[in-house]
Image (tube, rainbow, N blue to C red; front, side):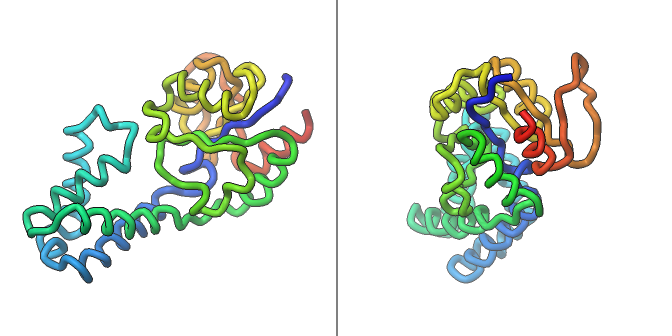
Length: 227
């Protein structure tokens, strides 16, 4: 296989997303408690999450844009108490700052440095993490999100856009991610090669020829260095 670029998913590939979102929800509630306490009384974390789920369900056209969906949630939460766009934007910033305070899986930092020495890296995520805030942008040639592109994985177009940013052809690009449908099948459907990060050792259950899989990014870096 000729390898000229690597595209990488972020959430649950480079860091676990569940603790990140837990901390982000807590940071949002802390900001609201300090600045808009009536909102916290009306919508504690569990109720805010139910509001989020309802808004997400009501706006499938924004399924690729978690930032827009979160802003709708905040406007709905704040407006009944007399707060407006300024408070919604400030509340979102408190949430988003925490959303970008991630803890990498232990092997990821070293593995990314090894990979960046072998091929250009482009991040390709359905989430709204910002590599500049996370502190990893220096290892990547570019970053693309479903929000910035306007469509989410597994749409082939976002994979092709990532290849364009990397300056590579799809059949010379290797995508790496944790999600069987969005990452593996999405990449293969767009003409890329695909690697599955199966940290829990679940095994492939979607039929067809199982993809090459690894339990951590260090194993994948070993594979790339062996090519």
